[in-house]
Image (cartoon, rainbow, N blue to C red; front, side, top):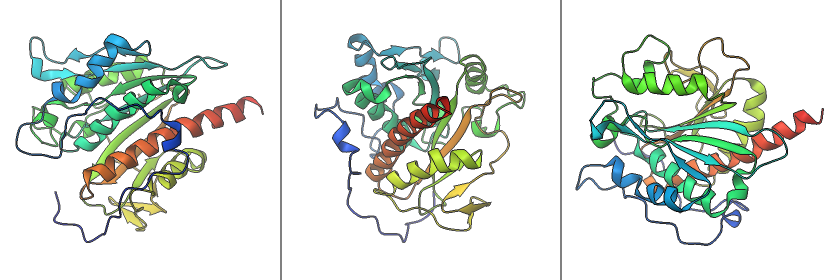
Length: 294
């Protein structure tokens, strides 16, 4: 992690209309990941979701161990079945903590599922395949890397032997996803930014997500972000081997990587992630509806 950021973060401020869409029912507590007094625990993080799977008609648990008989290798997977819309459901994958030292995305995903369960109409027309922790070993050990010492987000579609990558590649191949959302925190950035493939999706999906999340954190306006040319916090190039759909897949899902500044307060990061996730669901539903009416 880098040193203390020079940027000033203001108090949390909900986006107009965003907070209003959520039913005012207390959420089950989510594990506090900001403290370092005890080791992080995947099991503790997902406790609220495990409880929901026993009571909710919308949430299914499909978690799996990536190494036989190794509880520490549990990779949590969930499917959220939103209320039916007019057409075939939209299938989106949401992935967090593929770098284990970026826990805020994982916590935001847990809160996101709770919010959807409180107000399932927010997910009308969607089937969401959700992966709160893609790197269980790294998450529990506060490490970017997997148990092998490798960066999982450089391993995709490169004949990787990493069991987490093999599992995720299999799901990316067979779930028929129309979109992929990955959540990250960047300790070299002092503002929000995102990666997206395609100019159209920049306008219709990533730009609104950044705008809404900017109510909680500033946007990175640098012309170069993470080594790539950027415009208004949006880049169109990424590193080889990142989590992505298989080569040659058609029709190709949209891909968005949403990044918060890791030096920002954890609560600000979680709120920014939540704002972005809700924005993408809303805007992609509009995008699909518009295309169907052309």
